Image (tube, one colour):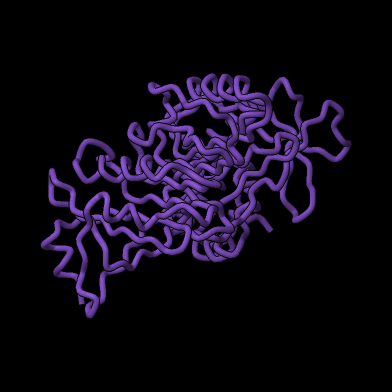
Length: 353
């Protein structure tokens, strides 16, 4: 029985109960079926948080739909091969014939020649953009070792650096890739070791969010140049003067106009974080009162991680001199957390219980 033979309400009921991967494949049956899917699933599609192209493993990239911490795969894995299996089928994706196979979980897998990589993923991206709409965020996750980003619109770049090699090689690769990248949503460096600092004019500082894990003393970025919204730093040790300068620049209004949240974890027992509070000058909420809780959505989070920043409930806060905006500041063990409010000091104190 053809789907088109049923009344619209019956069609919608059937489509409402289909997996996203099946809706994706069904949309290729005809232009009319694709139109019916888009019309009947408008609300469902609108509730999608993001569509993720996870390209960290180029031999088996994944395309998935994400609702908060829930993931639904459209294409579970892609096979880069010159010899296609006998059971492949072809679909016309945005004007390009692309070979697919069926794999585990009943999701289609790509089968294509490596030299066609860019055109294949550009076609798939354009098809998904038309099918699901441009109100959804589309994320492209890649690494420095297998860097590849299609030249398409409305794509948020998540860039991970797996720093291997000498200091000079790492820094050169880092700067080359950053210079070629579009504006980045999130940049992550794992086990950062090079002692050199990033170019002061690097586009790195324009990333909306950064995450750094490092083993050496030198902070690889000049925190004063960061123009983004959220920063996460984990290190073995660091100079207290660097952190004090970071906070003083926010307080004076000289930098970090867009900063919303920062968390710095120092895995060393002898770094006196509490000394920072006296140095930068902080205000205190009466110990008998309960301060408001600061938390907000992360700019970027992996699907199996918390979507929001860790809550900050602190009696300690600082006030920015230029606009009277407040930031809660908390030191718990080895972690310093800094959360900026939209409220002025008067509005902030009105939220105190």
